[in-house]
Length: 340
Image 1 (cartoon, rainbow, N blue to C red):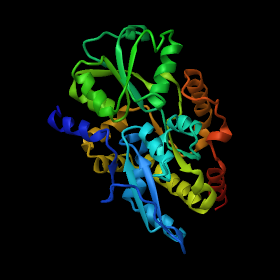
Image 2: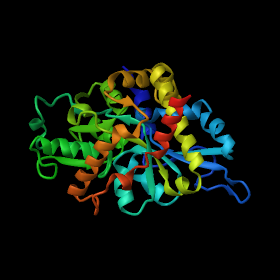
Image 3: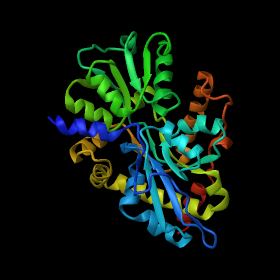
Image 4: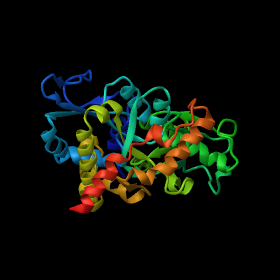
C-alpha cells in the first residue's frame, strides 16, 4: 500500500495556489506590435480529464504547430478547480482553458467573453464513501457531509442534480461542502466529511489508502454527461482565428494520441503532476470517463447544465448554445480532414 507518497501527492494534486510553469509569477501577455501575438497562456487542472493538454505540451506540439502563426512561447497555469481558472480568464490572464463545462457558465453570465471550441472528456468523477458507512441506495446519504468542488463546478452541478433526481434535497437533507481535491481528501481521511465527489485520479488515490470506496460513478448519475472542454477567449477568436483553428487541430491530435496510447498518457500525467505512474495508470483503468474532442458530443448536456445552474440560482440568465459554443472551428477542421 502506498502511504507516505500519497500524502505528498494529495498536497501536490490540488492546492489553493495556482502553480505556474516558468519563473514569472504574474501572467503577462506578450505581444509584439509588428508580428502580433507571440505567446499563448493556457489554464488546466491536475486531473486525468485533461491529459490531452499535457500530451500536446509534453510532445512539443503546441509550439511546433503554432510556430507558423507567430507563436514563439507558451505558458501554462495549474488551477485547483474550474472556479479560480475562470476568475483568471475573467481577469484576462489566460487565453485558453481546459476546464469543466460548467464553470464557464457562471463566468459567461458575469461577462466573460469566451466560447467552447472543442470537447475534452466526458464522465470520469466518482462518489467515494467512508468504508465504515453502509450504502445500498442514495437515501443512505441523507444526513451525511459530502465534499466536492465549489458551487458552479461540474462536480457540484452533477451531484446536486443527482440528489434531486433521487428525492434528496441538496440544501436540507445533506451538507455539501465546496473545497479543492486535497482538502476534500484530507477531510475524508480525518472523518470531517463522510464522502467526497471528485474527478479522477482522486478516487483512485483515496481507494489506494483503504479508508473509503467508490460507490457511484458519475456516468451512473448522469449517463454520458459532458465534462471537460476547451474554452478560448473571444478576443483570440476575433483577432486570431487561424490560431484558434490550429489549437483545435492540435487538441484533436493530442486526444487521439492518448486514446491510442493509454500507457504513455499515464506516464505524461505522472510526469506533469507528480502522481506515481501506478496511480495514473490505475485511475485510467478505474474511471468511466472517455477522452473526446468533438464539442457537439458535449453540447446537449452542457445546455442541461445551463438549465440546472439557472434553476439553482447560479446564473441570472438561461444561457443558450450561442452564448456558450463556437462549433465553426471544429466543424471546419473535421471537414478538411475528411477531404484529405
